[in-house]
Image (cartoon, rainbow, N blue to C red):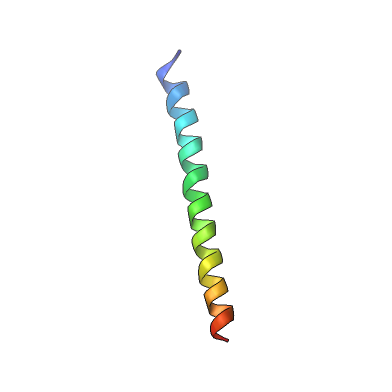
Length: 37
């Protein structure tokens, strides 16, 4: 197994995880803004 392959797969998984967390955070912020209105 080549190290670059492991690095690429790890990077994709990490990117998806970060994107998911950001999306969830934005969802919570939007929800709280709607409730405040």
